[in-house]
Length: 193
Image (cartoon, rainbow, N blue to C red; front, side, top):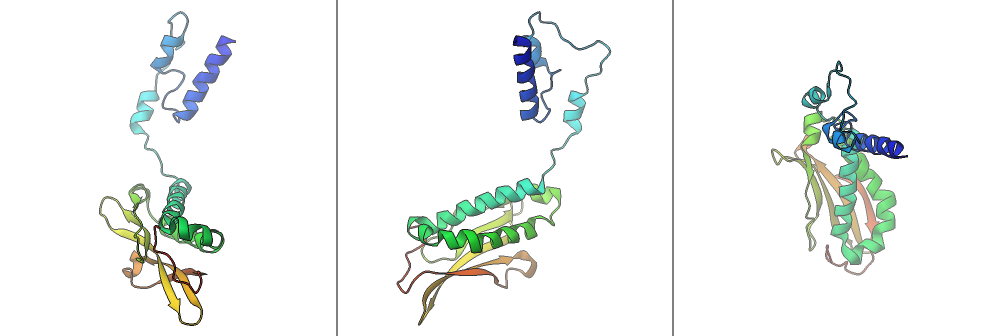
């Protein structure tokens, strides 16, 4: 029973540490009953060589997934408790899938080092400012893509939220429309409220 439990523990640690700590690692020697290593004397331990030469690869889906999770979090932070509950359904089903698509279009063509260097702003602007979040290169501070929402008042219809983004490709000049959500004829509350 103890042997099975030990094998399970070793396997779990190897999986969780992505193979950095293997069954041959020195921490397991202290757990053996007799203090003996189960290594054969002719086996070359390549785990240290592997660690020195291996570079963790950035999975594009993992990086995009992290950015997308942060994007949703920053969006709802901007909406606050007064706006968020009223527009969440339309935002989740209409606007946010387009935000995901724009993030993928921006991130997928970057090389591995550029992907590792991506970061997201953490403070959406309040009052009636447009900024939701920006994705940028952390080393240079250069924005890659900017997501904004503008409050528009239409004389007959009332207030709309216009979601759009800008990219570095055209020096943030054009508005790339993501969609609109109707608020009401009443003046909407300020962001972050």
